[in-house]
Length: 635
Image (tube, rainbow, N blue to C red; front, side):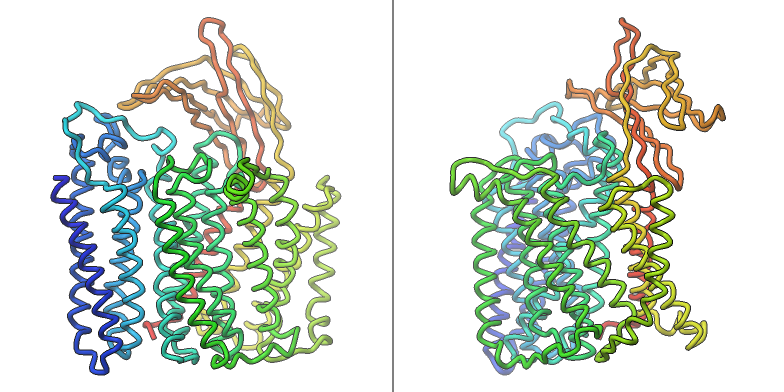
């Protein structure tokens, strides 16, 4: 079975290299007569990787432990759904999953732009073929997921218990869809530069796939945070871990790219910015995969060290050198019009570009500092959470402010008088909300500023919707879906801001070791701790304690935090219990227990407004989908 999978993936590599070379030949040939052959090779590559993927999944789900990858990440007792998700749980499997996804994206793009000029298509597909082949080179020659052992183990080592969570099913695939998808607009940008076509043709062509990709990446990041929140048992959802940061980096530049492309499309400005931003986003997607898969950084999310690092570095250096040399050579012919009016929408987006890139750079510096400090000084120096909080908060404050200004500014127009007239009610609303928040006891300065700017942003978005409906009628909501979809996304951002600020600055926590039957007073809650109980599942044994929760002597709910002992693993893993209300989450952790001593250690955490992070993410998703519905077909 392993030999079959390897032959298929090696065939996919040969097909991809062949397609790449033929597309280059097709580009140089004015007739484009080789194009169809290259197209068939790409389709063959997709079919080969698809069948190879099915072979790997079949091996995982049928306990074919002779395949080393299967033995490493599954065992007999692992639930079936996690055997499937083991496809992307390991290093080699996840990289092959990356390769398979790009071949699928490529074949969809083959159909979508089938009527485009053949030279344009040749560059786009040479880019995707080269990217897919790069990943297949690693899985064929460095970390082969189809490698077989010289014996057949009776059982496997099993999956890391932290990965045995529903988040493992959806978080990595969504994140990878976000990473892989940006290869397509990158290929279009490269084609536009090489052909000296600096019109908005390529932007119109990729605006839908770019938004779809951004939605996948956004959803992947937030669902990853939600997975950490319910699984890691520390009461948080974002720890500024280097691998967490790695997924955020392309999201920041991708968000800037989407905003910049709007101005490119409508006003033919910010052209150079748009070319640079899609380049940065593509390279950061590769860098994110490198940081996670190479083992070069220490993280709860990362894999062990491997020889992959040099492959990633050479690919990033080579692709960057090709793109940037072409961009620099063509830069004079791009004819990018300057931003003359600061308070116009393009002026706001121009400033936002600098802020998003600046924010990306300070996060990148903090995340990669251990790598460079070890290379330069033979000493791994890292930054702590306070670094990220100190350097990122100013960026977030200004981005929130600009987001509000951008919602009321117009394309090509700039009037300070009109801007001041528009924002005056929002400023009044901001002070009122800030006063209410302050009187409720939330008096810390930094969160108060963040609450204020988020309130300012929310009021402007709300009034923009009301004014547009009054001016154009209620049908405007359906006719101008792209505009309203963007506003819904920004409302989601405001809600996420409130949730992050409240839960980050006003989280409360209490830890106590008590005997069963004791009541713990935790804020407004009374927690009545029950006896330790046990239950046995197919792949773990669980110790848990039922805790009855009362609010002002009124019974609310019984929560059951656990500690699980998985097969093939001596360490215990916590499973938190969460009681969600609009005003915040009660979060209980069974920290320890001793049956002989009859004691239970409980950690209680209250996370204010944290549910609004997930609500805000849902709104961002719905807003993105609503914007997509404005495009009836690919252009």
